[in-house]
Image: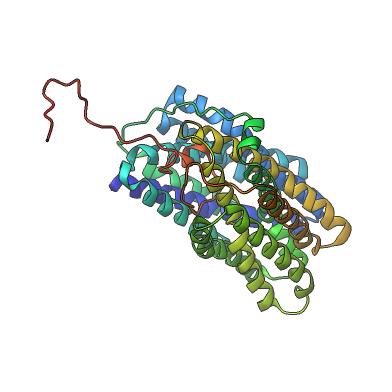
Amino acid sequence: MRPLVALLAGVALLLMGSGLLGTLLAVRGRLENFDDQTMGLIMSGYFVGFFLGTYLAPGLIQRIGHIRAFAFYAALVAAAILLHPVFVDPWAWGALRVLTGVGLVGLYTVIESWLNVQAPPDKRSQVFAVYMAVNLLALAAGQWFISWLDPASFVLFSVVAIFVCLAALPVVASRMVQPTLPAVPRLALASLWRAAPAAASGSLLAGLAMGAFWGMGAVYATGLGLDLQGIAALMSATILGGALLQWPIGRASDRGDRRTTLAIICAIAALIGVAMMFTAAQSQAALFGLFFLFGGVAFAIYPLCVAHLLDHLPVEDTLSGCSSLLLLNGVGSAIGPALAGAAMVRFGPSALPASFAIVLGALALIAAGRRLVRHRDRDHPSVFHPMLRTTPSALELLPETGPAPEGPDLSDPHHKDPN
């Protein structure tokens, strides 16, 4: 149990820092008079780096080991963070965001692959649930540091770097045996589409919407004129909504056709986006409530797509299929902030919730259309798991994708049949 606590403590510190950094860059970018399109491109850099890092991290970790790789990536991320206030330039920030994305996916890969080894086979689902809860709560907690210190100074960047360095302490000091990092093949996108078209399109479009939120949510809040506490409250409300409402939505989807649930929650999210457009200037409290509800339904879209895919993939293809779904979501996440930023330059802050309404409304129509075109029974019934998009290593914690528990070695001459 102690190794799990050390790993969860490390990821909590890491997520508090990375959650704060995204909001800090949005606020500081506004202070530096970066326009919304520029900020959208800068924020997209993180997801580009995250996408590249999924290919680069496994090779480095296998070559130098988990502990050294964690120290390497922590140093890379801390250095990139500290360079932001030194080079206050859009091009420099874009490059640093790419480096940050590469480094953070490496750190997540180390932690998640270690969790896979440390989690008992019969407790994998519980460990995964705790891990995702820690992720969401740490992200929400990190937002509030923006209201305690001056974002115009270098101090908050130093705080983020300190969190990253502190996250390394319980991991680097560990005496845990370093696990092997197996290669995770990806299922061809054509095969993914044939297995579950709603899951494939849902993952891509959910990436567009949620990438826009993570990249431009704080920029939107500054555009509305919210103070630092208001920005922290808006981002936290959305994250907490995602943490609290995923579970009941998931349980409902387990009892019926997931495409129906997907169509309903996307339609609700699209309507909430429309309501945000008209509520922003009327009532701040109502706007926060809408963002809470939006987080609750929008954060459930990607895990719902994963569950739908697992319902229709043979066991031997589950991990490779989920890895390909993650790839689609990452592509959408990289494009989303850039598109939302360009729209916000042209139409103002209200373009962000409008983009939510358009993208998720389209996904609602796709899911409903697939439901009407074809009725499907679940070939391999699975269970919904609340989650964030992280790395393929996290998906290995799911009972549906993880390795089967090892049985006794029947070739051992000392083995005795209990019967």
